[in-house]
Length: 250
Image (tube, rainbow, N blue to C red; front, side):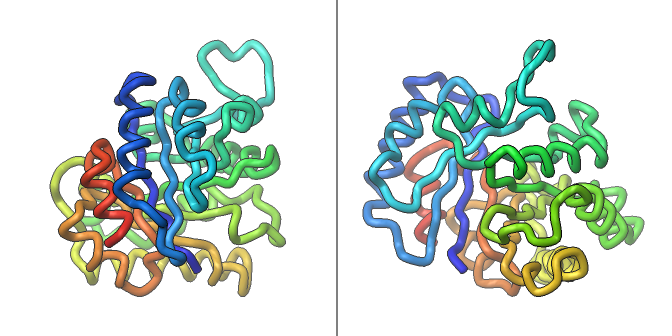
């Protein structure tokens, strides 16, 4: 199973900045190791320029940070999976904590998105993770189980494992500089793995589980060496080609 090294650029970078960072990333990474894939989620406005930079570079992919549950219609400000694909995106992100906790998306809506994105031809990365108060209340397993089961409720049992990934991102570690400890990451990823096996049988062993939460060049190697960690989803440290290239090659 190849490690998926994913970057979420959030609401940063103009088209020119995105193009420059993508070019720098490709140059610094060089020939991508056979056991790695790179995935970048730029702003919608830069999907096409990043796709153009990645063209011809095996193992480099582009995704959309969000999408809606309809292919077209009177949904001002939304974007359809087919529109992302038309721009060059191959992946979509669903359930990021900022969508859940800042913009109010429910578990049910996230699940609708995941199923619709997959049915529309996107590969989907489903984000899950607990709040600090939920961890302190010993509710990690309860939260992750609920989010995974709701998030994957509409996904068919015979799903292609390569089309789906789960990203565990403890909300308290996103952009804070705090990183979950090795035991915390292993325990959370084991919960995610068990849920995937419950839902999809043996296929659940082949669905990648990523870790996200203040991943940096100096801690990435230790994180991706842990059991059931099949890659990372990186925020701030992915905004510069130099730092993200070190993470990709960790």
